[in-house]
Amino acid sequence: MARVAFPQLETERLVLREHRFLDQEAVFSVFTDEVVTRYYLVAPFSNMAQVQQIIQSRIDQFYAGKGIRWAITRQGEDTLLGSCGFSDWGQGAAELGYELARPYWNQGIMTEALRACLTYAFSERGLSRIEAQILPENEASRRVLQKLGFQWAGWRKKGGYLNGRTYDLELFVLENKNG
Picture: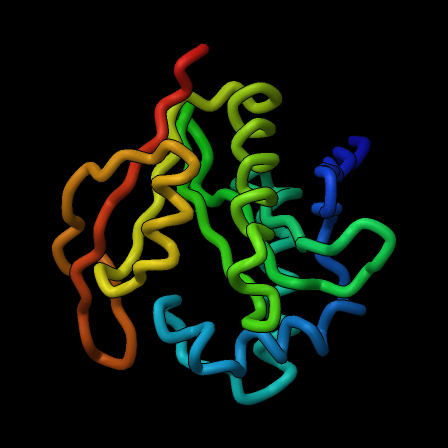
């Protein structure tokens, strides 16, 4: 059976492409930054084996038909700035996830990347609902989701877990108005 091609997306400033093992240093930089990971419900990475595992899992997720995660880069450059994409897609819905290296915060990069992802999800994949879960303290993520039209939909009590502790998460939902 032929392998499905990974869809590359382009925006005015960005290219969203498949993850590569050449991205290891940039991924390590993102996931060792405690400020970036504080709302991610993952402990900061401590070694390259963790990086290789996350890159491989993101590649495998797409080819297994379970979701997609794009590496975010600038047009004309190939350095990973962060990532975004969907997991658990099926039955018309998916969960949105994303992270961005701190030097690229507050430049509209994630909003621009997520707009492209959402367009792909609704028009190319035919999804009808996208969910996003965030820690209540994550104001920046809340602003991005609201900018994109997500609506607050309630709480996921004890929806997150890290280091032996459970966390309540806020649930945001975006419905496909054309689907």
